[in-house]
Amino acid sequence: MSNRNRPLVIAVAAVAVVAVAGGGMLAAARGPESQTGAAAAPLSVPTTPPVTLPASKVVIDATKLPTGRTPQVSYLRGRTVQGGISSPVKVPGSVPVEAVARLWDTTMAMEVPNANSSSLVVLDEAGKVSQRLPGIDSLVTSADGNAAAFATGGRYTGHDGGTVHFRSTDGKDLTLDHARAREIEVLAVVDRSVYLSSRPEDSKTPNLYRWDVDASAVAEPLKVARPVAVSPDGTLAAGLPVFTDSGLCSVVTDLAKNRQQWRTCQYRLDNFSPRNAFVIGYAPNAGSPYGESTASALDAKTGRVLRTWLAESLRNAVPEDDDHVLFEWHNQAGPESRSAVVRCTVSTGQCELASPLSPEPLLLGS
Image 1 (cartoon, rainbow, N blue to C red):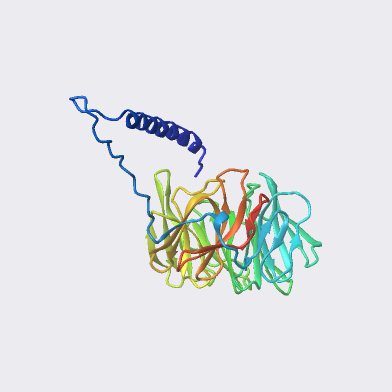
Image 2 (cartoon, rainbow, N blue to C red):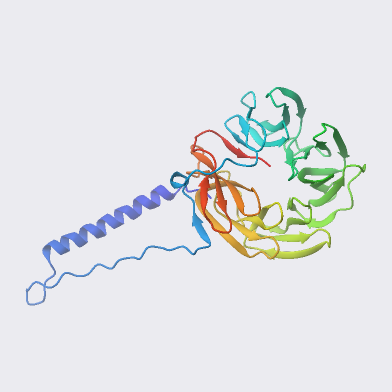
């Protein structure tokens, strides 16, 4: 949420505090008097005890954190993709990058030059551009780093239909023509299956589909309305069956049984950990371009809140493993901010710096 009005509120509060404090000091200097004119004892000033957060809530201040190991997933700092097992690779040019991923020694960057176009830039281990694919507007990789999926879904151009791609480490590119669909977005790739969100031409609600890449078409839709995430092992999915002007509710579904596991109207769910230990949750009204003030880890099986982190601006969260979350931490909710990758432990709440503070653009990959 924006803190646009905080300086004004703080200034007004400061004036009030100064006025009260000034009046108190003047009275103390003069000394309270009794009705007979004798000096009375000074009045005691009540003190406000400091606010103590419960152990489940942790405030992140990256400027005071110790330095830990570098991120174990890909991320973009400035124009350089780093992290994981590959060497740093610089994305040429100056076009804004909205997503990055790595497939062993291959680096992929999704560029969005304007509101009406996008493309995927593929670079080899030396940073040389080997391919440019126009129209790609979503990108994910598998948890083991052996496969990637991307699609031309019309998210920027607004066209109907699209093509879904599956690429493995052998360099082969299998495609699916998903013609009679709109708003196509790849959500996960598990082994040789791609999970994607799209809506039929005659429907307003997106559904979850699975494409087994050796088949020529998607399977029947799974019972997940408005899907937002699929777990890395393909067993759980999060969707938004209730999404209105009055609010939203998230549901976690067991895909094997096609049955709802649990439901919450207090969190908008996103991103499962590798073995489903937890799922990231944001406030229901999340969606500010300058980040959120809170993010939580919820038990993926039950929905119980395990840990909540608070900061001026958290713009993304990616589970690194089943006990650690990587955050894009920013020192302010605005465009001119300094940022860092911060690693936090779910079981203890403790955090550390995973990258140095810098004003350069920061983006966590899949």
